[in-house]
Image (tube, rainbow, N blue to C red; front, side, top):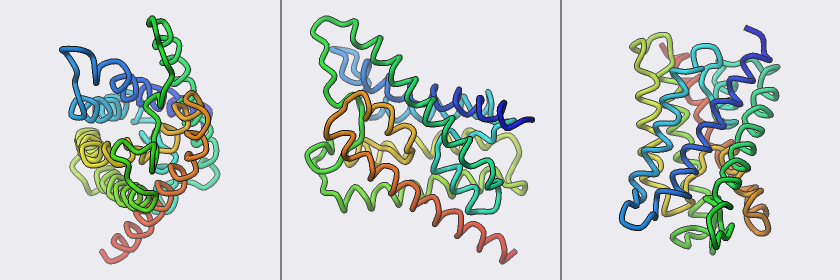
Length: 230
């Protein structure tokens, strides 16, 4: 299948991830009497990835995340020429989803943009965690996320179950890291909400590109080394 079609699938999948996960955080997490809390938001993100892997992953690879794309490249599982088109499509998908969420959210009386489900450190961390804490958390979580993806999608893994493993891993990561960074592990997921929130949220966006990419590169290199031993 052409790179145009595969990139379009990645845009579609990343849109759904940001729309579903951040939408749950914006609309349902604190709804009076029916709030789904951290647990509900964590499952929302996991379900978006799980559903899109089965919807479009069979022809895109189901990345929906620049860090995953870079991790696959580092692991020798993805062509370098396709990295940039995938990342561009994923970022566009994340921004479009954030714009649609803004259109919906702004229809409520008294709407204030606030943090708009963006990621942050220091004063913008949900738990006010320091920069180094947030960096370590994002690197470690992304490392294990990409490690699971590379393992679950290996030709030696049981067929048909990758989406479940990946979705549950993303759910677990959110349960760990929502209080720390509001959970990124995905630069495209971070970019859209940060652009809507504006100001200092954009100023902190660099961390949520750097840390996931570092974690993904390490995961890809480790996976390549482990595979070479067998």
